[in-house]
Image (cartoon, rainbow, N blue to C red; front, side, top):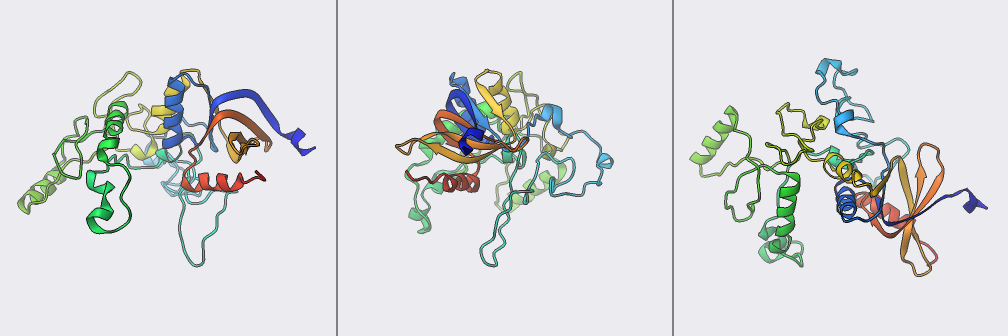
Amino acid sequence: MGDLQIHKEPKKYDAVIVGSGAGGGMAAYVLAHAGLKVCLLEAGPMFDPKKDSNQLKNPWESPRRGAGTRFRPFGDFDGCYWGWEIDGEPYTHVGDTKWEWWRARMLGGRTNHWGRISLRFGPMDFKRKSIDGLGDDWPIGYEDVKPYYDQIDRMLGVFGTNEGLPNDPDGIFLPPPKPRLHELFIKNAGRRVGVPVIPSRLSILTKQINKERGACFFCAQCGRSCKVYGDFSASSCLIIPALETGNIDLVTNAMAREVLTDKDGLATGVSYINKEDMQEYQVSGRTVVLAASACESARLLLNSKSAR
């Protein structure tokens, strides 16, 4: 009888993606532009920086004068919803450990909460065990992933300079901003002691790369999200453009509960709770992509254990 109260979406998708952050957003973008039909589940609300950002508000307009809350730990105007604690989503610590888990609940996930620092792994990063005996070597090397780094540089826009450093690979960079006075002091001091000082490498547009995104106008409020899409977030740079293909059905406020499987144990879809009406829904697809962050994806896998 209980199954009769589960709302089952009759449409079958090519892919069901859980999570709209860096991984889920990129998966949705690539699949939608390839012509595949995608259902994208996001546990939080819709968020479009062009409409929803507080980027240009004055500090004194903040109701709490910048003080944080559980919903926005970095203040009322911060670009990320939720943080270390989310109402209704507790987690436990082992013993006396105190590990804080930052979580976002909104379109774009935690790409709404990062410093836009966009560094490549260098050749030595893939071979640490061979170099210092720690950890394990990767089964791939830098040259295997370089084409994808190049693709991302072109697609999303990263500023920086090519310096020929051995473990900080060159890229396809936009020009960096001109250094400010204190940065020139640091650079000159570094030169005197033999320490190279180079511009940061950030996913911020110092010049326009397409008609959908504007260039940075140096308001210094990246943390509030960018109304002109001048920096990278999965919402502004991946999902919103992908929605224009007509190949994505976006379901917000959808808390994934379980990955559904067939008699052979293969994934067939996802069961989720609609946080607005608290009803359970099921959506099916040929492929399921779990991109809900490492811990949340692990939770879903544990929830998905069945008799099969």
